[in-house]
Length: 167
Image 1 (tube, rainbow, N blue to C red):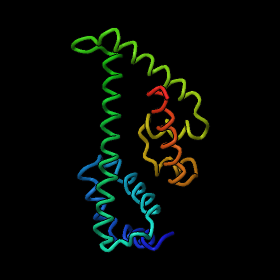
Image 2 (image 1 turned 120 degrees about the vertical axis):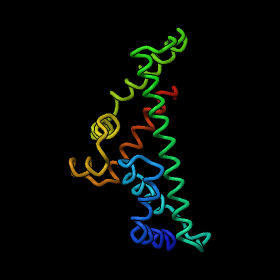
Image 3 (image 1 turned 60 degrees about the vertical axis):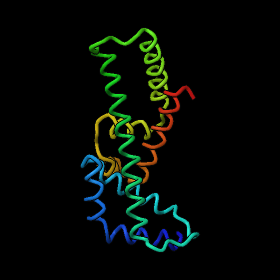
Image 4 (image 1 turned 90 degrees about the vertical axis):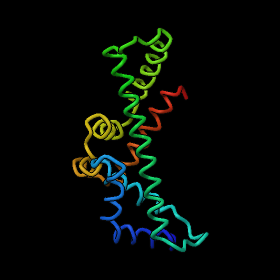
């Protein structure tokens, strides 16, 4: 671990409550722990060059970036959920035949990719993204590390996103 990464990891512990308060202003309460974990993972990748002069400022900027990224992801999920509900339950104005065809095609690709997820990735993804169980609770339930849970969720989202985009 680099010197910068080590110092930032220690600073996360010192500033944990302040970071949580900052993140809770931007994110849903149930996402704050995941954001702190993501922040810790990003800190581990920080190199020694260039040296970071104001580590606290750097850490809070990194935390803001994590919140921004997770907020965008949450907005994307809500948009997809709304689109799915519109398709399932109807809308004020029905979607065009082309929109329906595209949506069905995307849904088929995503469902096929979801069926192809390996275990425990499929279970972890379902518990977190479908059932809404926080990553820390999944880690305890499955007796794995939170890092393992996060890696499986990220990989599943990557696979499903690629399938949705036709990649």
